[in-house]
Image (cartoon, rainbow, N blue to C red; front, side, top):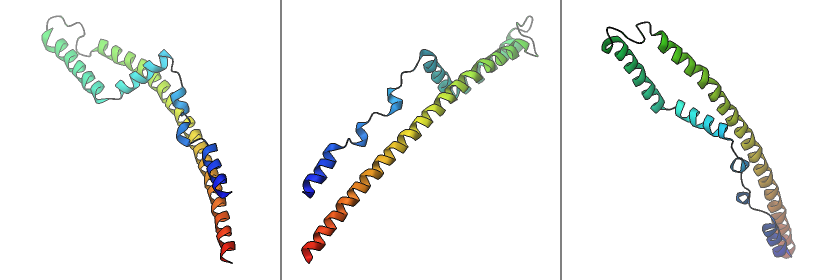
Length: 142
């Protein structure tokens, strides 16, 4: 009887790993994919190094190479405009990606909570079975 009870409980329940995590079921739009890519690239050392090199090249070309007629003379107003536009575009894209990450975190927390509840129920079932075995052993001893 006990053997049937335990085996039926084990066979009747789905393993935790059998459920597919909701994050992996999610389909991303093209905009979401690009937002994630831009955020990943924009927060990398590659972006910082490339950006620093472009700034140095811009300054060098306008200050020394084009001494007679630079396209963006010293206060670099055009460079400031480009940097402002970059910041104006990059900030909302990063915020979109952060909002998606927050949503993923909420889904993750909900999924973890469900897994923990399931594990708690399984532990309670195992505890009941152990108590039953203990009682049977105690009856046999008497």
